[in-house]
Image (tube, rainbow, N blue to C red; front, top):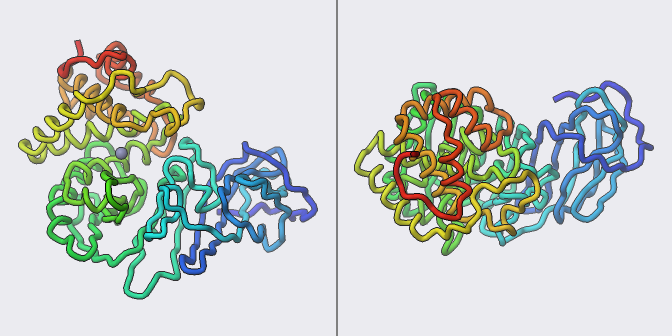
Length: 414
Ligand SMILES: [Zn+2]
């Protein structure tokens, strides 16, 4: 982080400037007082002002370099009175926040969940998945007898929805260390030890495979699965790297644990350029969970693929998977968040692997990661990389699996 060397003129009026990007985000929360401070490093801008999403936060003060800045709370956005600057500038925003129990902020039950675009209910942010920021995080005011599990820092560029905490009665169980030196743990709640051990039986091996196959992990050296009480009916997990969340009822499911771990490379490690590229995140990691478990534990891998196939048979062909636009689809309201991108995406990669060999596809995925790690990318970039890296052009196979309203038969690409 660095502060612009020039003196700040406190008389600059609050000005909208959506182009000024967020580079780093330092967060400190008191979860009892429901107060917080966010130190946001904003990028250089030839124009004055800055705009951040603030949901229903109550902004009390904005400072930069110890000087109060003018600001305007426009409802769900905040405009700042910043002069143009050729260097990054830090602003510290003091605010109050509110509980949100509809998967759109800090839940009363003790966890946070802001995917896809509810970060503004927790901290001033840019919610577009292409917009990457590093994080530091501190959580205080934790009730006696409970533990807040969260990453003190996220050193690589991450989408806003990646940062999270969960507060509960946790036990940390260290599972092992990968060859690259990453410590893999699981955090479980009372009564969950056996389930946690079963669900993470192959997690160190999976993480090691991801590091060796695709390249260095960007989000720290202590990772793992955190069992989170999302409440009845909530299954699956959320890619809150480096301490990803697993719904407590899915904790024992190896596929869910490996799926969330794989997001460290696809979805988080490489961000989505647009929500339309959702399949680049979920399709890729659903394939990887099946592929990795098949390599590590063939019988379990076969069960995962059989389960995917049985779920695929219930996917309506009309459910969107890979819309042909960028920045116009609302991932929730336009029904892109369904099982369709997960399964049709997984079977697209499966079809490519069956056509050319899974090891060749792994090589292409590694090439893709080297090119886009820390950056946003599109699903079309993935197809280009597969074609150039393997010599097999997957375009028509992708059309059939990701765009057609007729779901193809499972098998190799024609
Ligand atoms: Zn996922």
